[in-house]
Image (tube, rainbow, N blue to C red; front, side, top):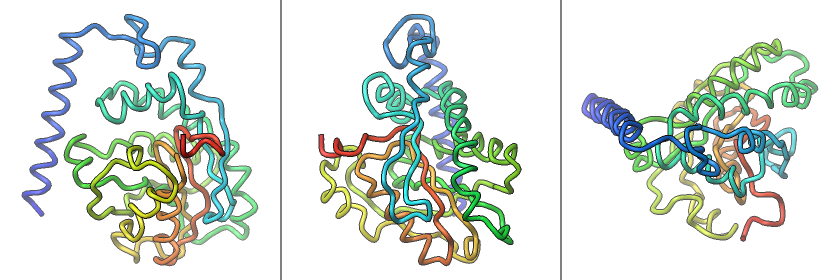
Length: 246
């Protein structure tokens, strides 16, 4: 365990140094359209918050909320952040996730009466161990913290909890094409690390991208097995219903 923590810390330092070196060697450009000298140009930034919902019957509210459709500049922005370690995007992506808090609060409020005994747990969808090593961090963590703070401003008791783990997976979720293939790829691979920390708690699951919904569905099943209540799922972006296999 100590060796694993040391290795993760070393990966995080190496990743941060590589990102700093890249910023020195290459001029910054908008992650969405490539416009020079801007992290995000105003046009691409405006595309990040165009909320949509997709069906998610495994959750108490029956749907998942996403900040924007997963296409065009939004797709490029999220992939630059997720797969190319563009960490300065943590702040704007965290802000758009926080902007979902008022609508989310209204949606879940009827389900929280009477007031639950425990806090709402905000849980990241898990990444594979290989993805964690490559990134050197839990990339969703800053997004979760922004959402937790926004929920607290809505008067809700919430905290972040890294509760889910993923067993070995050979392909990225966005590479395993088709609803059936993605579902088969993840079946039984997502589990709760410590069920005692979740039992009786309402839970919000946060992912970066929802394509077919297989990941959030498997998360809900694992949470229910642990005695938690999956309230709703959220994501930075989602493929609009009917376009999952494109």
